[in-house]
Image (cartoon, rainbow, N blue to C red; front, side, top):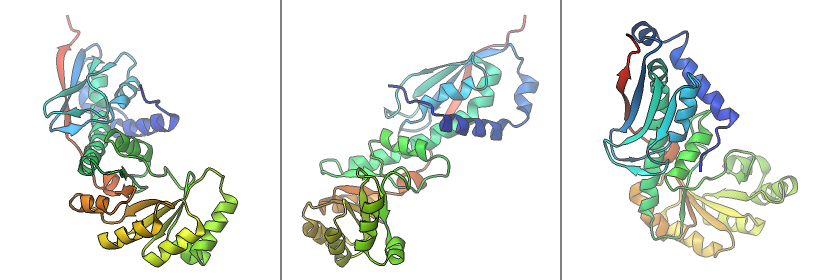
Length: 286
């Protein structure tokens, strides 16, 4: 099933193209005849989980609607180094002008999907989910959270508007956990979830008393997490958060939490290198 290109995503693509092309591609317009046609092959330069293929057609269509993209795999598929993941065929000028923008989206989103898959595989067999955070690149949140899903992860809230998360600063400003949760319940829609960030067992108990839906165990040691899970006793969902690395992941899962949030999925995922090589060029000259 294709992903819908929203107005926000299309605007983002246009900004990226304008940033790169500006007043015109000096090299391409000087060296490539307007009638030249060819095919560009997008190839992965290392093993990865691919994400972002659904953007390619829109990127090239904005430059020339004669370009046709054929995806050779689906977003979320694991691909081996050297695999051709997509072909773009049409005017060579458009292929070259859109090349870097297409690769930039592809390498960034595939990097997030690939890292997410590593985290998801690391907790395989445990009844917990790997979730993302709002630590995303400004303007790219929708796409980066899409990439998390393609890697097998689960999205936390998309923004400040779709769920309430009471953090330490909210507690300080509000006066107490109970007051903060009560005010949110009074103002928020009935279906909105309320989560509270807790740094110790006393705050966990206060949050249980307040009736929050989700309790975040923030920067707790593994033993304290396990004690918190026992205290909560399934009266709320439990999320572990804060400095959770791949090396520590399984011991956190063993503590019995329901969710493990990892900011690194979006703020520190290394890009996956791809290239596009032009093949079967027809210069169009007699």
